[in-house]
Length: 211
Image (cartoon, rainbow, N blue to C red):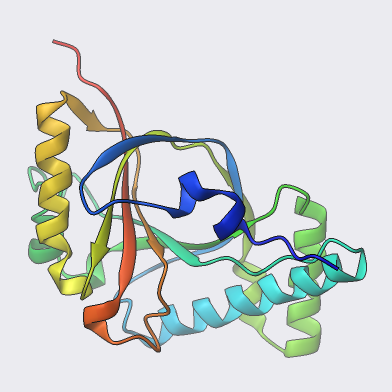
């Protein structure tokens, strides 16, 4: 039985170049959980554990229905209080805003055939069978990013400001402004991959600036 692998079938979503480019992202479904604080902290790790446990519960439900799929890459939306940290540019934010001040929504993309009701069933199964209470905070999440600037960042997360500067310069040159939350797709498992080999898609939703 064949298995759906979104990283192979949706190359627009999972492929990026090392120089910024504009692509259009259609409405996409995810399971997600929100939080705040340092991504190297215990809470972030526990949220990832709950998210993956639920993703695999969904996968096994779908496999039983002959809809097997490869669990996709981890993703995250990142944001901060723009009033408190007013005037900080995209590339400066990781350097000037403490990790404890960042809000996040970590996500795992779901195939279109996965429904909200099936997700809720899988969440309940994860709570009952795996005893992962944190899974109660997971939700079925829909997002339509539309036009985005994206670029492939290779290397440690602490070097992201250099890549974000490319996006900032591209945005200015094309008279674009931010139109959504900073989005990262972790093509590498950062728990197992050497930092210099990490591959991360950085994505910024944008719209045209009108003067």
